[in-house]
Image (spheres, helix red, strand yellow):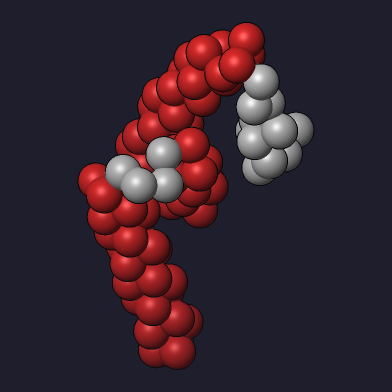
Length: 91
């Protein structure tokens, strides 16, 4: 679903009558993206976890906890990639 969703899908919904619905949809998608990110982390799929966390940050860009978590994910992934490179070089 996230692959089909455009990052600006809801930004054009600004009429008063739909703002409440927009807020509810964005909150549900925020929760879903967090859940999917955690699921991917547990499955060891860090690149996918990062993609889902980026969506969470998209829906709540001022959420400092999410910004920290995505930063931690990028750092963890970077370290994992570095350890793979070191392993390839020593083989």
